[in-house]
Length: 108
Length: 116
Image (cartoon, rainbow over all chains, first blue to last red; front, side):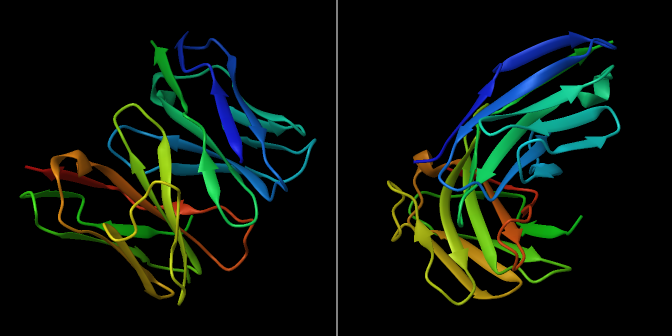
């Protein structure tokens, strides 16, 4: 069965303090790995899709990378508005399964 | 990104009654829709996957007779919680994906269900 493990469970950063979130996965036939941001009481908001090892994507202060076993979401010089839960999901043939998420808090 | 509308955003119902939640893709055709349940401070738990015109595929442990899913068109899926009990209280979220299987899914706003 597919497994998605995210670490750390929670991360507290000072504004401007860069860091990385990890998503480890085991899946039979990866069709895509997705990163989402979720604010409390709302549905997840799509950030990135990665399809193959070595692929990287960037958006503002966020950069996502992918290897054959894990993905990283790098946050450069975060701001308080980056505080949210970041979820990664993997897709095999049809299902999309999520990790437990990393709750990021950025303090001013 | 594509827009997925979920309705209602909040609902309170009495034990024993049924509640229907709608999920609509507004600007694309959703060949696949996913229904998730999320408990506080936990991740999304996949309940079922439905492809348009087919019966939904339920995850192990999800009662198909209790959580009725209908995906009758390319823009609408519904989840009906039948004979609701307080333990069914949760945050339910739908997502929709177009015909290409390896593309991202877009999420609705979620529905907070409280059964009293």
